[in-house]
Length: 362
Image (cartoon, rainbow, N blue to C red; front, side):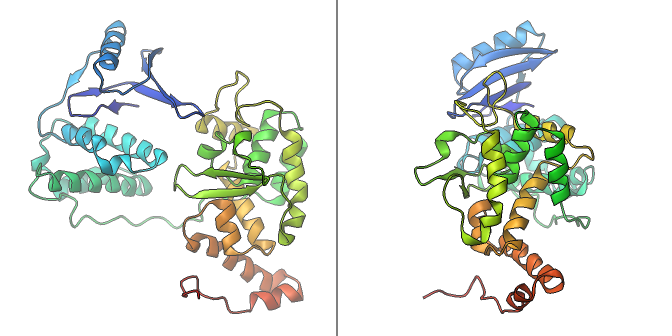
């Protein structure tokens, strides 16, 4: 990964970072198999740049100048601006990855010469989902360049998103998947703890690795802010469960039995460090026989809430959604299934008209 410092001065190659649970970011230079600590930022400070230059010299690297009014210079300036800073940590990581690739391929090109056909040519090199993600990055950069008078046009005008293949996304874990995993990995193993944490909380891996006892309030609810959306998630921890969720008590007991005392974060490594999101995903994938994903556990929990009779609002609260649309999809699917396989009472419930989420409330 490469990070570009603010101000359009230099591009810092091979720079990586980690952020601890307290929100403090530490930087490292990874080059030629060597990891050199650089301490804290800001990454455009003279002190940090001196440490970086020294480390690059020790590993045979060099700081590359950035051409004025180039694509790389726009990337640098955009990263220093307000729009970039208002994005979530997770989305800034996505933007950084795409900007790094853009700089690698087109960094020296003049931004004023960028045209729509250049954007389309770049997108055509990528898979459908990656191409649409890249287009979002190009739109932010080109809008910034145009509004800042770096370019006479917005080169993404008229460039449309590509069609995506039909997919239901990550496959939810079935009840049998959960049972098989529990039979294979006993309480006390890190694999079991990781699975139970993801299954009970419905958290994404990027959030699950940061969950800690300090997030559990006096009301017995685990509360955290999602990195991807900024939405708040509220997970019953030790508080009484609502009536529709009483059958979930066994799942909660599985998790609570797995927790270790006196930990800073629930899923920390054996060395007491915050586990990485990729490390957690890989841990789950390696522990399953058929390679089902960690994210499938989130879908399993939200599906279970809907099938137990939880409302769209309950799914929003537990899953941390910021809009009702995705939460309502879970409820709608559960209702359609209930018409066919549910009890008579569930079938009647499924046939009741549902008030629109957009209807004004008195």
